Length: 199
Image 1 (cartoon, rainbow, N blue to C red):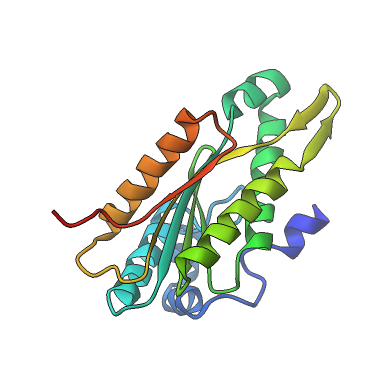
Image 2: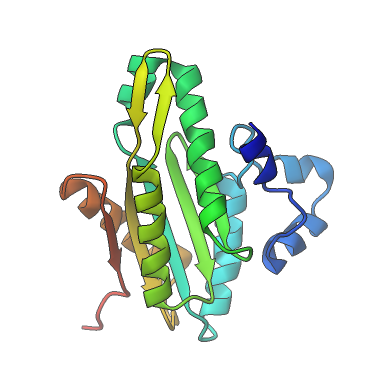
């Protein structure tokens, strides 16, 4: 709990886009954009921040988007109970916040699916960060009364240096295709793709 509390979303150091969004919201709207369980941005907040990051990327900034989910999470819930499943979600959320930069955005889309938005990043740096998240998760062995849970993630990334002509939906679609490929390759994988090639 101490580790999670230390890395909660509202830790005073937030990227400027995130802080700007929070400053514009009243307390009730702010709460509506935060995931209650993990204290990350929820789907609504994360997608709004993705739109802002995509606007910056249209002006030539690099951008990385990563969709990820916990491998065999249903088996964890069924075998160890939903309270343990919630603990796993919090653990992964804390690890994500610990791995990303201050200006990066971590969002829980729902269930065991997360979204990372990494503005102003090169494809090479993005690839290293995504792989670091995968290997650090793989190293976790969560001890429970019913046994040890070995955690792994499947990650699908989309990276571009110049995203002109692409929408947020385009970027999410490409990341989702990469996530599907990571699962098809056997899970505990990170697959990263770039913009579609011009015809």
